[in-house]
Length: 193
Image (cartoon, rainbow, N blue to C red; front, side, top):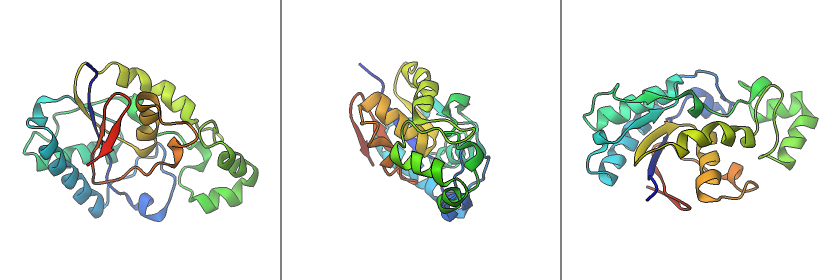
């Protein structure tokens, strides 16, 4: 039997609200993001009878750690009862981090066109592609020994959906990955709650 992953994307940051490419920049949650984290915790309580008994694996970036802490707080669990794993960090947008998509397009029109043509395989300057990201995260997810809570990023969710659920590479980068909800990932299937 394969593990079920209860995936929580970090709550909103100001850069999310502004449409900026965050990548691995360490941007904090805003007030709305804190509320989304608490909401995700309450949803998880309805899905899992004892979420405190599951391992919690979290990207080490501030926005994911604080999301885990607020979600766990909403569950009345020790806010720091999780482990971090660097493999869960967001996809690197390299030189584009901090830019909006229109700014990246204006700065590097040929690179931006190449990304639009192949979002999965494209690697931004000094960044990584979704192929690179799958290679990084796959050992983490393949090593899960049972049901787990994972708190990470939108790019990581898209990569794991391709890796675990067979979402086509041309479709995965276009999936909406919601904040304030829980993505339940099984073997070859997923659903949003």
